[in-house]
Length: 321
Image (cartoon, rainbow, N blue to C red):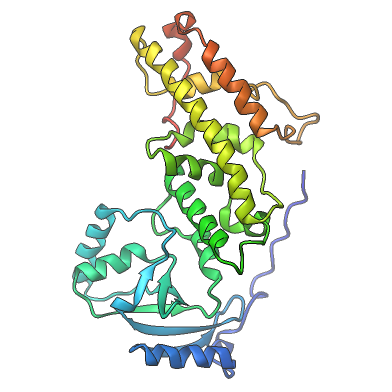
């Protein structure tokens, strides 16, 4: 097992409180401050982040100049309505969004629902922590806890980031593995491509299998997406075969929210794979070969041999979609 990470001693990391407001911002930060004013906004404070020491701007921006980053999940109308109901009761907007400068305006990677709620309320401005480094937007998405992701939301978000990087000449030739932190898991890229083709795809049922096989690619992000598209096509083909088996099980009188996970588990060739030694992980399997084997097993699956007691041991919530 890897050695346990040593915990820093108290009060040994970052700046002292008095250091946060000390010093003069660099030229690029001052240029960004002038841009905010030119855009009709106001700079409320210039300060250094107390953890890492990087310069930030606390700003007020015209609401029409800021948009959510385009690769985020779809907004939740229920969450927007809840925020729009709470903000007037408090009488204050106390949670500034994070923003970066982009293409004549501003993007927020973590404040979509708050932004939409303010628009619904007819607000004129929004307070934001403006980060000078635009590339930080991708990283902040990985830390976004405004509303918990399910497998579908996170997969679509990740693949949209990847498409944006692949379309940008400045990043298209960089390896996919450069964004391991932002993407969080390679499986999300493959599942995201599936969700793009089929919004009803059950990614949660296949996540354990894909996670055991997938790895970040050293190939350029544009090239890796093309390769992943082939895996996604195979996975969708497998899902169609699994859905057919589930239909046969239902026709035989078997009813359970776990039918699809049950079938996937039965045809999963990795379920018996074990690590060579205690504490080690099982070796990574080849994704294409695994999907081919699962597809063949799904097509040969005999629904007539499944008995109600075979499903009795299944419990817990169904896998996230």
